[in-house]
Amino acid sequence: MDKILLIDDESDVQYSFRRIFDSPEIEITTANSGEEALKLAPKLKPDLLIMDVRMGGISGLETLQRLRQFDKKVLVIMMTAYGTTQTAIEAMKLGAYDYLLKPFDVPRLKQIVFNALKAARDMKQVVSCQPQAASEVDALGIVGRCEAMQNVFKTIGQVAASSATVLITGESGTGKELVARAIYHHSPRDQEPYLAINCAAIPENLLESELFGHEKGAFTGAVAQRIGKFEQCHRGTIFLDEIGDMSLPTQTKILRVLQSGTFERVGGNQPIQVDVRVVAATNKPLEQAVASRQFREDLFYRLNVLRIHLPPLRERREDISLLVNYFLDKFARRQKQAPKSISANALALLIAHHWPGNVRELENIIQRAIVVAKGDAILADDLPPEIAGPKGAVIPAATPLPVLPVATSPATAAAVACGDNLAAIAKTLFDFARRDPSLKILPAVERELLIHALNETKGNQVQAAKLLGITRATLRKRVEKFKIKQDLLVH
Ligand SMILES: Nc1ncnc2c1ncn2[C@@H]1O[C@H](COP(=O)(O)OP(=O)(O)OP(=O)(O)O)[C@@H](O)[C@H]1O
Ligand SMILES: [Mg+2]
Image 1 (cartoon, rainbow, N blue to C red):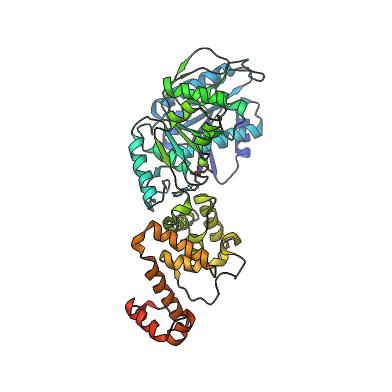
Image 2: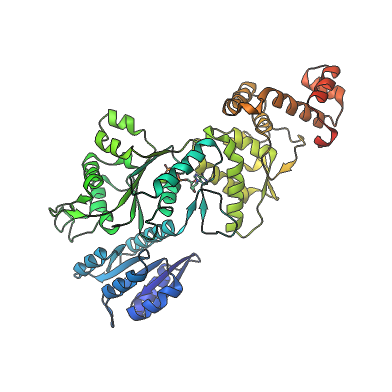
C-alpha cells in the first residue's frame, strides 16, 4: 500500500484528495500544519508528502528544509496557488519532486501523484541479485543461475561502488530496469534519490526541458522557470531508459553532463553544476544507430565503457523453471495464498517456447495461468494458445506425467513440449547439449524415452519396445544399461 501524507490547512483540499485517491491501494493521512507533519512523518514513514507552500505556522518551504535534514529521499510535491510559482521553484531547488498549481487540474494531479508513487517504489524496493527470502517482502530478486546472469551479478557488484556511468543493453523484458535499480541499491548513493526517465515516452521537444529544466520564456508555453530532473537528482542516480530514442541535441547535453557535470537550463546561459550518477539502458543496437548517425559516436563510447548485457530468455532456458517457481511464489505471496505448482507438461511447454517478450512475457503468462488454473497446479491447458498450441493438440490427455513443483530434466521437458515435431525437438535438445555438454544428451534422451514408453504401457516391455520401434531384447538391454528401476516408473 502507498502512504501519502497530505499537509494543508484547508479542509476542502483534504476532502478532495480523499475523494480523488479513494483506493484500497492508497492510504492518506492528513496534517493541518508543518509542525504536525514533522511530528507525524518519522512515525508514519510516508511514501509521498504533498504539502501546501503557504500554511499557518511554519511555511511549506521551511517544513521541507527541516524534513530533508532527516530524510533525503522522501518524495515531496508542493502545492501553490497560481502566481506564487517562484516559491514552487525554490521548493524544487530544495529537492521537491514536483509542484502542483491550485486550483487543481485533476488528470494532471493524478499523473503527478502516480508518477511520484512509482518513483517512491523504485527507491524503496530493494533489488537483490538472489531470489528473495520469504520475509523480505519489499525485496525484488534478479533470478538467474546461468553463466551469463552470474556474470551480470558480478558486474553489478563491481560497478555499484563507483559513480561511473553504466550502459545496460538487452531485448525488451530482459530485466534492464531491474538491473538499474540493483546498481542503485548496492551503491553508496542508496540514501539519495533515484529518478527514472523513459526517454521514449516523453515527446522529443519536452525531454530536454524535463531533464535540464527551462527558464521562463525559453519557448512558447514556458510561463515559468522549471527545474529539471538532473538538478533535482543532485547527489543521486538518474536512470535514462531507452536512451537510443533520444534526439541528437539532447544527446549533446548528456555528453556534456557526463564529461563536466555541467549543463544549462533550456533558454538559460548560466552553467549549473551537478553530481549525478547516470545509468542508461536501451533495447536498440546502439552500434547501428551510431553507424546511421542517429546516435553520437562520442556519447556511445562514453556510455559503453561499463556495459551490462542481459541475454534473451531463449538463450538461458535453464533459468526458466527457476523463474517460474519464483513468479508462482511472488504472486502467491502477493495474494496471501499458498503457491500453486506446475505440471511437468506445462513446464515443458514453457521451456520450449521462443519467448519474444522475454521475462516480462513469462511473468505475465504465469500471472494469468494462476488465475485460470482451476486446481492447485497449473496445467498445459491453462497456458495461452501461442504456448500450448491448439487445445489438446500437443499432448495426449492420457500421458501419465506426475505434477511436479520443480523442473523436470531438460530432456524430458523439450521432448514433451514439441509434440510430434521431431526437427523442433531435436533443435531444442541440441541447444541444451551445446550449452551444457555434460548433459550427455543422446543417452539422456534415450533413457527418458524408455521411461515414457514403459510408463505408457504400464511396464509391458513388449508393448513398450513396439512403441519405440525396437525389439524386446534391445529394450531389455537398454533398461539394464540405463539402470531403469521399477521405482522410477509412475504407473
Ligand atoms: N532475472 C529476472 N528475475 C526476476 N524478474 C525479472 C527478471 N528479469 C526481468 N524480470 C521481471 O520482468 C519484467 C520486465 O523487466 P524490466 O522492466 O526490467 O525489463 P526491461 O529490460 O527494462 O524491458 P523494456 O526494454 O521493455 O523496458 C519486470 O516485472 C521484472 O521484474
Ligand atoms: Mg525497461
